[in-house]
Image (cartoon, rainbow, N blue to C red):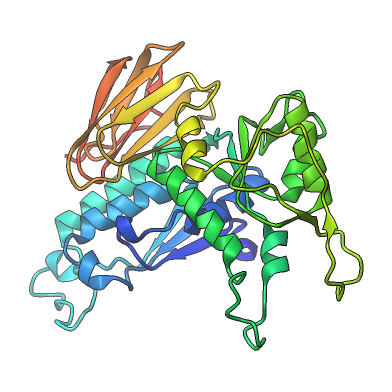
Amino acid sequence: VLRATGRPGLDVLACVPERFSIRTVKYPQMVARKRGGIGMMVEICPFSCLDEFNKAPVDNMVGVMNLLYLSGVCYTNSYFGTDFSDFAPGKIDKPASTAASHRMKRDEARFFAAYVGRLGLVLDGARNECGVFVYSAPEDAEARYHPANSSIWKDKFLGQTDSSIQVLTDALFQKAVDFSFIDAEDVVEAAKNPSAPAIFGTRVRVIVVPALNWMKRETWNGLRALAAAGTKICFVDNYPRYSTDLAPLDAWDSVPLGEATEFAKPTAVEQIVADLEALPGDPFRAEADGLFYQAHYTAPDGREIRMLASGSRQPIEVSVSHASRASFTLFDVETGVATAATLPATVKLPPLRAAFLVIEGPPPHRMVSSS
């Protein structure tokens, strides 16, 4: 996909929000941000979890699209089929009764296309401003890997890195803390200017390192330099113990990374997530009595965009405030209606629907209503 379109791509087969893994989109998002925030292409393929999907197909797909666009998707190829016989009754045959996935009726297809179109219109060309970075630890995963034909392939280390990342990122996601993955290259680059570090053009607010054993020494040194200059570095459960700049590859002895007094003590995931819910330095606050997600973007003309997406199947109310701004425009993605909003305010989100708060000025491009 990257060669053909110039953008990283992903497939989504489990098109049910409760089944969606945020890591599915966050790994290609890292590639897109490394390449200048070019966005991603997605193919939505409702082929898995069909019993669940078909109970509320349009709602399920809309809920998943919110999460994809929230994380940087900007192009969609769809295998979410349409019953075209509804467009020309008597001239086009109905889908076979054995079709596994729901086929949208005419009104459903119009609504879905308009909804996804509005997501793309608001976020077109916008730059993600997420300053929470999770270290993706590829070197730890490689160091722990045992081939499946090994006599110890069921060893507890198999997949331990991924398990640690899964626990951390799921907890962040469930608490509406947006994040981006990074690797050693990003840490080293940020450490070149430790007093004002930036990754993907965004100021670094915090770097979270999952529980791991091995780390590249240049990453370790970069994190130390950033911490010494005041950047918040969080370690889950433990510090990495060993450097990957080993002796021979067949050596069993690893080289210790050594002590580092620049860091705070490692803590549990729950404590780290609780600290990040009120992100230091971010003037925007959003709280709700139900599950929701959020992301921060800057429009090409410099306006601040805040996306709020419901993860609940019940209506929820999100209380929002801003420390330095009061006048926003609220865009309802479902209806295409734009209204003035003065913060603090309460944003009412229907089940699995999204809204945008855009600071001052007219809507990006032209919002299209459902009428």
